[in-house]
Image (tube, rainbow, N blue to C red; front, side, top):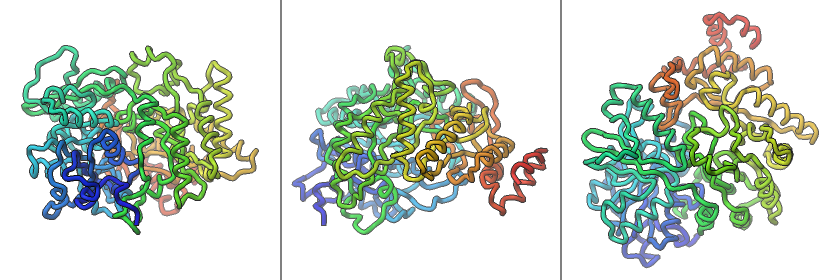
Length: 600
């Protein structure tokens, strides 16, 4: 049996084994506790520990009994931390059709009984009821993306900031390591309320707001409830500000109080990021899960995260709103140290499952002239075209791949995260950068694909792709041709697996019919497809809710009913005989008998 003292303690006995009378911080998480840097609660716990704070974690507490899990460690000396887990608890639980997912990937054996819906609110409310005088700090993706008034797809209504419903004292948004340490230090030093409220990258509620000309004051929550355009205006203001390096404070009145969101910290430096990933993670599930399968862990156990942030700015994605648009990259030395740790694991067979990040080939990329970046509020550095100030040099990433592959014991390293082929196909004025892009493409296909390379064109329609902030489908066709050309040269028979989305705002049934024809011409029978799921704080969700694009005020058609969404998704499966009849009926109704001939 492994020594449980190597993990953060999860029980009173484990705290006693460490000689603790009382934890400084107790974290509650909706995920199983896996001590791996891909899991946010483990990272926050290890960071607090590295700063000298005695940190315990209660994974997946039972919220339906006498609440003994919430009481078993007693009162922390400083505060409780709460996260729903690595995903929003509602996205984790339900599909776009609001059906229960086949399993909860972050719960032992994939069970659905490990966490409640709206887990952040449930956990925080319980803690404030049991320990009203102990501060509660909420964080993670669920709290981060619900920090202001937001549309909730599962209730089909606008909800106020999660601070309101959770009754939490503070909210940490984004990648919260710096904020959580600042909060811990401030409480530990006995600082007052005002000192804590000056900490960057946190949110809180005040009863009285003194206007400040530098603040961004949003439309009040009550006005958004009665006017969808006011909610859309708020989104535009928040997204524009969050894409800046130097941000302003955001304030929104909710009932008779005010939600305040402080500006974020600057992006992590390489040294700061290395320090986080160099902490003594066991990289293993806690011993309490012996003999149980945790699906998410099976996927990432031998993977390495190279960087944080994403400048793609996809309209349906929450990454840039959570991790930021600026890329923070680890040093090669830090990555290789982690690779060596993986090699030493007893179950390692020689294959690194992923050297990646939010977008695998954005490592070390960013603005050339940082002063221009400081003034920039573009949501995407790649759309509608690649920014002229963007460094797209892939040589540092190639150097990292070569270093990882040369570690004794590594047979092969795969790139399991998505890649941006628009970066690979972009032609720079520097021939050296172009040569590196060609070399990267070839090495990716030759050495780093485990039989199937996943990419995300998402759609074929130019107008839908424009709303999505994705590149032209012609670029995908160009990359597809290059992929199969290189495969043929190398004598490989690897597959290219494209991801597509149906029912995205702007997408009509006719667009889906044309997508089916376009992909059939390329000989793709689609597997990796999804129906658009509105998630808090994305442009696509705001269009879904308001019916218009916040940036142009133009109305946008969106499939919103289950029947409309199902009809669109059906076009993905034109090759399945059981869908043929209904697809043909749809095509006749829209007067596109010509497409019947193309498809069938």
